[in-house]
Picture 1 (tube, one colour):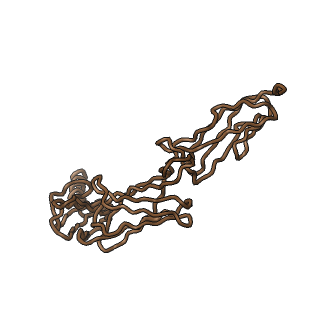
Picture 2 (cartoon, one colour; picture 1 turned 180 degrees about the vertical axis):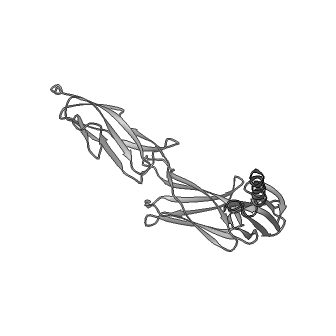
Picture 3 (tube, one colour; picture 1 turned 90 degrees about the horizontal axis):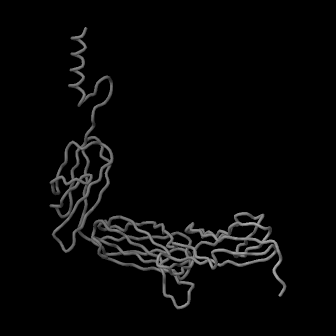
Length: 289
C-alpha cells in the first residue's frame, strides 16, 4: 500500500506542470509577440528589462494583466510607450507606432465660472513639449494639444482665476495631472477632475465675544498655497457648534443666545477646507453709550 501511494505521488508531481493533480489545473502561459515602427525599440515587461528589442517574441508569460513599456532612444528626446495588456493562453500581439503625430483633447466638465482659464502642459522628461489654453464657456472648458509625436506624456493642468483682491493678477485656483499616451493618427479624449487649490480659509477674527441678543460679523476668504486670495467655485457654509449659545447665519453673522462658549465654523464646499472661530457669549448688557 505504501509503495503504491509513493508511486501515485510521483506521478502527480510529474503531471502537475501540464495537467495538475487531483483535478486541479496547472500554470497557464501565453506568448507575447511585440513589434514597433520603427523597430529596434527596447522592451520592458512589468518594469524589468527583457534584454530584447522589437520585433521580439517573449515566451512563457503568465496569463493575466501585464505592462509592456517600449523605450525609444537615440533621437532628440527619449520617448516611451506604456501598454497594458491582459495576456491570455496562446498567442498575444502588441504593436506601437512611434511615427507620425497624434492629439489629445482634455475636457473639464465641472461647474466652472466665466473668466477662468484652463492651461494644459504636455511634458516628457520634465520638459514641456506642447501647451494649450482655453477659456471657460458655459460652465466647462475643452482644449486640444495637436501635432505631438507618439508616446507617453504627463499632462500638467492648471485653472486660473481672478483674485478678489484689487491689483492682483490671475491666481491658481485648481490643478490636476494625468499620465497618458499620444497615439499616431488618433485624438485621445480625457476628462480631467480638478483639485481645488484652496489651502486655507482665513477669518477676520479668530475669536468673537458677543452679548446675549447682540450680533457680530465674521468674514472668510480662501487662499491658495501661495497665500493669494482666490475666488471660490463652491460656497461658504457657516455652522454653529451650539445653537443654544450662539447662532450663525449664511453671511457669518454671529448672534448671542445664552451665556457660554461655542464655535462658528465655515466650510468651503468645493475644497472641503474649513476654519473655526471661538465664540464667547456673555449675558450682561453692554454699557450705555
